[in-house]
Length: 132
Image (cartoon, rainbow, N blue to C red):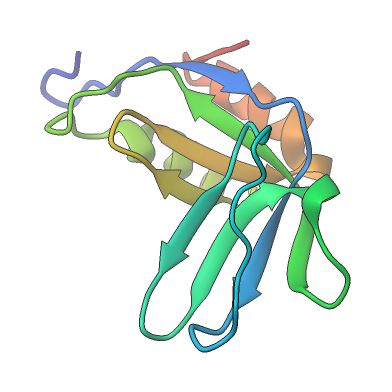
């Protein structure tokens, strides 16, 4: 898919719901994903727990940054494929669009603020990616 200096051209789907990035201490209890959730990501370190989840599932009192939208790269992607995130993040950074990146075994996700979604799609299309 990627040869030499050529950047991959990717197909990207915009996830339908607004997401929140929630911050927990490793010493405090954190929620489990609800049975019907469509996107939920938990990252645990000895310093913090970060959960990306639908805004509608937030509970009062949680430390959260809201108003994010998810962009899913069509996959599965080979784990030895290079340049995927760079082909997305470099043009977005040049355009001043902040991102929050999540990778899974099969693909990558970028979160952008809902207020930046149209601009992000425009930038990514301009560099050859397809936005669905």
